[in-house]
Amino acid sequence: MFWNLRNSIDFLLRQHVHISRKNYKENNEDKNSLDFTKSELELESLLLNKYNFYYYKNNSTIPNYCQNLYILNLLDKYLSPVKNEKFSILDVGSKNWYYVQAEYSYFKKYCNELNLDGVEIDAYRLYSNFYNRFEVAKYYINNLQGVNYIPNDVMNINKQYDYIIWILPFVLIEPHRFWGLPDRYFNPEKLFEHVYLLLKKNGKMLIINQGEEEFNTQKNIMSGLKYESLLLDNMFYKYKHERYLSIIEKE
Ligand SMILES: C[S@@+](CC[C@H](N)C(=O)[O-])C[C@H]1O[C@@H](n2cnc3c(N)ncnc32)[C@H](O)[C@@H]1O
Image (tube, rainbow, N blue to C red; front, side, top):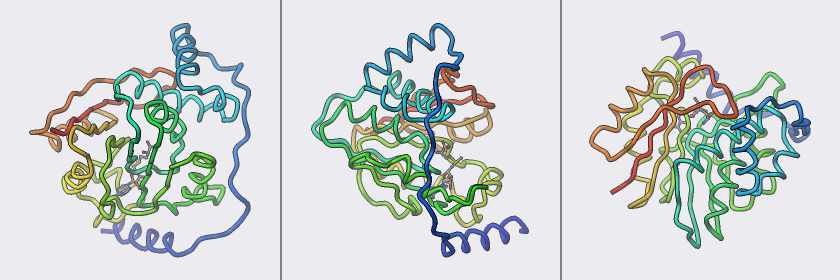
């Protein structure tokens, strides 16, 4: 009750009060101090060449580079798109979209024209430096053609997509509240049903969950659908909780 009231008031304020200031920016960090294992180094070199990722290695912070390599690696390992003229991709719950470069570089390799949309319901949530997620996302998507950050509820999206990426959906109420969202937005089954409708026939949805409880809840939500799941390794970035990947193919 208390959480919901507090979250509802804060959420409403965030949607309407925006501070304006200099554009957000991060500085490159030297990657020589990275302590990758031998197999990570080999894989890094493969990914850098295959996806032309050197530019990002030379223009990113160390944690951000590692998180992007983590995502690029799992897209490379578990998706295998057939080359197409055009792809439309949706990222659900993008936060500040710190991993957009990995998604962009990956899908750009397999098409001539890329439309990549990231939707985030709480785009104006502030960081301690007083920049909000939207402002940080604008920095990450700068110069990426065909990429749009959409500050909105995914329930209001009605396009059709070839691939949908959904990293850490809120399937339990505690993290949903902890991250400051009002209870009225918590309906994981309804949300999933809607997102699934946005997927084209033969399209694929890739979902990552953290921890066994979230993963088991996710499996209940997906029951009846054609999907495969596995436990992810921690290549390039060590996450606190184990992460599970599910890939759903729309029949
Ligand atoms: C656990 S965070 C994951 C963020 C990001 N994908 C990542 O990997 O760090 C879940 C995100 O989903 C967003 N979200 C929750 N419900 C949503 C909805 N209905 N539409 C769009 N975004 C939503 C939340 O605001 C939050 O930023």
